[in-house]
Amino acid sequence: MKDQLKTKQVLIQELASLKQKIAELEQSESVRKRDEETLRESEERFTQMAEQAREMIWEVNDEGLYTYVSRGCELITGYNPDEIVEKRYFYDLHPEEGRESFKKAAFEVFERKERFHELLNAVLTKDGREVWVSTNGIPILDSQGNLLATAVPTTTSPTANGRRRYCKRVRRDIDCLQNIRQKPFGS
Image (tube, helix red, strand yellow):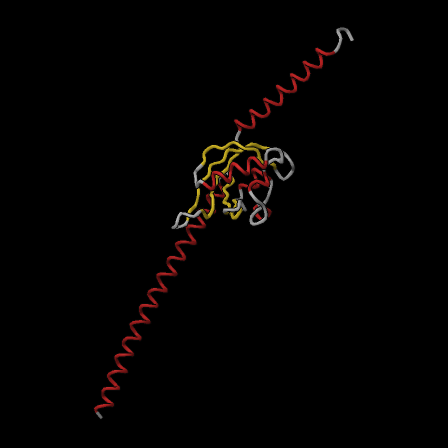
């Protein structure tokens, strides 16, 4: 009888311990669900802000492959994010002339894990136009300091685009003047 009483007490203690563990798991699950909801709301707010910005917010991995692109991409490049994410590298949008030097310079900055600010560079749009953008970037590092990605907001640069149009106009005017100068007077 004494053994039965002891066994009963052990079972009661085990049951109480199991009830405590179940309560802890339920509380932990509740906290996890609350954290997931908070994260989902935060991601939703970020997405809404990114979509409202007239910027192309993007992220590339350490190889330069796009891992995220906001809807602003369509305004600047004409590409839908689905046409770029996990399919193109950042340098694919750079004009062919100068692409390799642009790529090399960008990877040097990535390797040094440096920020960059107001980098003016050309981008080829889906329809083949060249637009100038102003780009800022920050490295995203893991806890050991390894580069995971680079996050970048990009916006069209009216100053750079205006400068480019002005230079084209000046070149056209110079060509015109040279043609006039080369023609004999009165012909």
